[in-house]
Length: 154
Image 1 (spheres, rainbow, N blue to C red):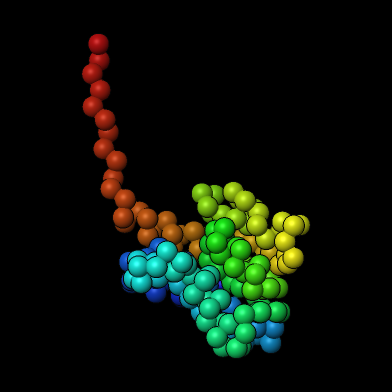
Image 2: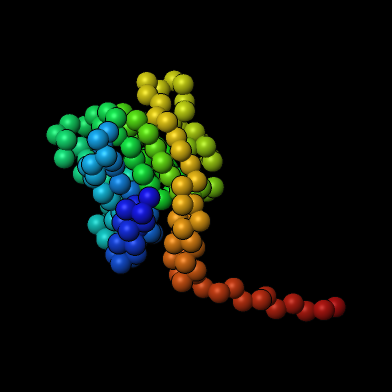
């Protein structure tokens, strides 16, 4: 998860939400790394998981990432959850829960859908506090402070 957190920090430099991902092979070698590049690349598919999965597939020379583990700082969305299922990733490890868009148990549960041909092992909550803190800090600096609304007493 420390490698994924380091990737997440790179996303912030490009103006993107700090989410990082790393694909680890069955032998423990890093196959691919990624961080959000949606803003930097003007790419709606530029999620950390997609970037890392593409890098890993290029490194092994095929789209099947059998035996691999995807480590990501935030619960994957539907697109990323679908991609890791299609890539045959064996295990997903993630940090913070995404109650707004999470597709690994929060809003949906794509990876455990019995209708799909592959269901990876899921490990949640790894360094969740550190992962959430990175996101909280990012959004706190970008949101305008709320001003109290004027009220009139009758």
